[in-house]
Image (cartoon, rainbow, N blue to C red):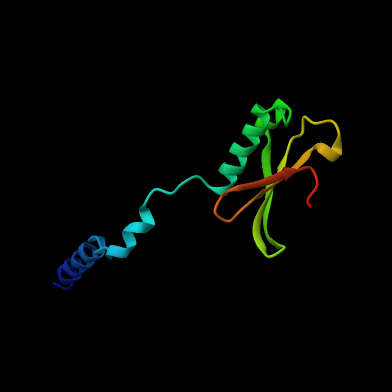
Length: 113
């Protein structure tokens, strides 16, 4: 009898835990589709610079190696660092892409200014 009671209680507990929880209306925004990330927008900016011949074509295959957040002259900026191993000159192998927190391209340079 104890075994049967335990099995029934375990079944009720499992059914209760398996039931979906009522979603709060504000939680729906958490699953809304998001736009491109800042890294994706920076990559698009690099691709545009390649199209305009401001960077060699090999930069389309560059990988982001790190990023940082900074405040310069009172403006918040993301600094995304891309590296292109196919560039022979070490000083030009890294590209620092500056973006606003909203995802707008500011500038790109081989030195962080």
